[in-house]
Length: 428
Image (cartoon, rainbow, N blue to C red; front, side, top):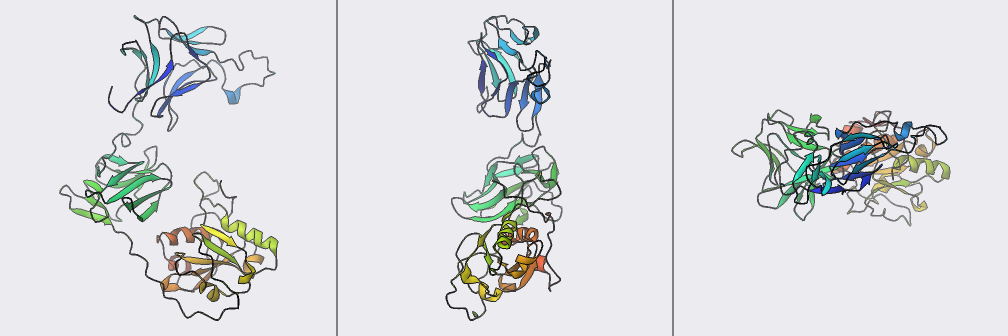
């Protein structure tokens, strides 16, 4: 047996499995005795049926009749049994033999499920007496993982990392919903959002691609705008994710963004007595400045913290803004300029959100957003709460600029580019 692969015990002689499942040690495959009587070996990642006995003699759970139905087979799925003579048998609830391997030529010690995607009968010495066909590869790319330092043509990177040759930097794929470059045991230098389960591959033609779990390839999130035929992707010793040729000459590199320049703040306007600095939270505050209607404020706060989806059906991961409602009468009636002057110097907020009288009374509770970037500090725009989500996400990671949303001049409220402007309750 190859190192790193193992077996999980399913049955010993005289035992049976009924309406249950056992996974291999890696968790990639699972043997299931189903309610319908079929015994199936599944690849868990995509529910692909690797092998089955074909003994589904009754309906599954979702299509079974009610308990009062005279169908005598309801709730009696039979069993998978390992007989003392080594015969692996699928029995119906009536005791009828539906499938079997037949008795073995020598005593059987156990039925096992293997990390390679097959089940086997073994004797006490570990010799295989019978086995099911080995699972086909799910996608060749995921079965050709990169080593710890580079992704070569035809290889992939998923739930893994690349480390620079000097050991100082690493590129990680599979951390929640993002990939990122960081110093080893140090800060994150930059990150890119990806869908959960996605990875990267370098095609046989040397093109970097973003790849879904089923192998469907998309244009690469990490990669150049122009075509580059690379031999490998790696992390350089100076902390860049790079595509290189056969001589390790850099063809393209993802340059870390420049650290944000210190914001140039205008002279602070005169403030009302008792106006405190805004709290130094990580989330951007949605500052309430109008206190005429508590019900309207609750609705506004709910919309700014809600989940938003692309399209009509919320099948994908939701989008939400990293904001926190701030209900404090000491900020009542303050202007955007006054509130911008109260932003803590140590904050990294790209914008400020204000729930003013207009936000309270407009049908969709459109908020007022204030730029805190040096080049547009203090500029204001009206935005829908769906647009606020896109602005907060993209401005926070420097993926887009204020002008990409606001334009050069105020042309009305900012609408979302991708998400539907219909809120859903925040996901737990």
